[in-house]
Image 1 (tube, rainbow, N blue to C red):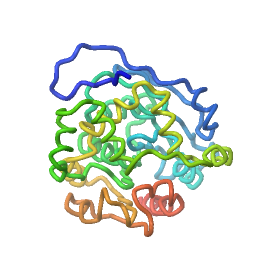
Image 2: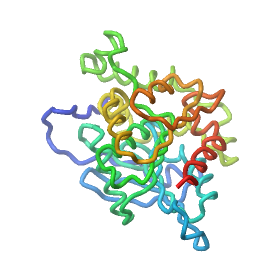
Image 3: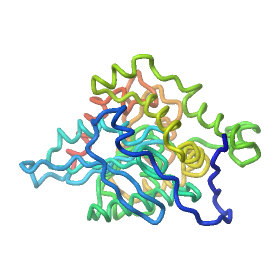
Image 4: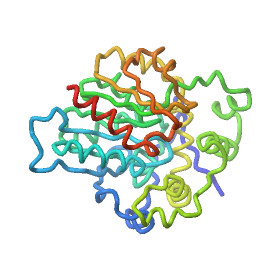
Length: 320
């Protein structure tokens, strides 16, 4: 199988059209319709999908929370944040909550460009413009947390507040060994790089639970099954994941977090106590002070402890 290789930052490349995402029907036929129907935005990089939980018409219009944008992590697309978005939407009925599939994820295309943070910032700006939102409360998980922080650092006027859940971006690439650094710098085959990146992200081989069909039938989000579907059905997904891991902001974004903290934009960080990708100390070192830790859970806190995360964000939002 030929593996799609995306350009790296600074490389010259011939402009090409994006790799198209799968259809919505191919996704919902397996995972159901727990997300609202997809809406699409066409940009210079390709077509991206987003999902709206509209404000209730009888919701209080004087609430400080009117517009909320949810930004997912690498691999699991917007559906992975559906439980949290649904919980917060019910608690803040006047809020219009929107989830977006980032490039190469879910129902969004893979643009044939370097997957730098700026490409994802552009998508967020385009989406806010499409929604006619001058700003929003941004909730970012994992890579989405890193993207949200760097977006706030560069486009602070568009971020009312930021809630960063288990944010990526503070892993230092210098801690990797020589072989791993070779994967990051391009001194290995793309097949080797792909295998290493996916195993690093998964903590081993991807294992889809045996009861995933039954769990989905009960309305659950089975992230492992979603990730497996993307690898099989989205022709650009693997390349996007590798591109994001190498160039998008999973690592070495300390400077961007410092800038985000210095903007003065209200922020909340939520961590699982067992998370090995981010710690209270990591966040303190970049100036993030409002940090809360959820016990007995790791990096998957956003799905495994939805009520606890929703409580923390609710309290944060109610402070405005």
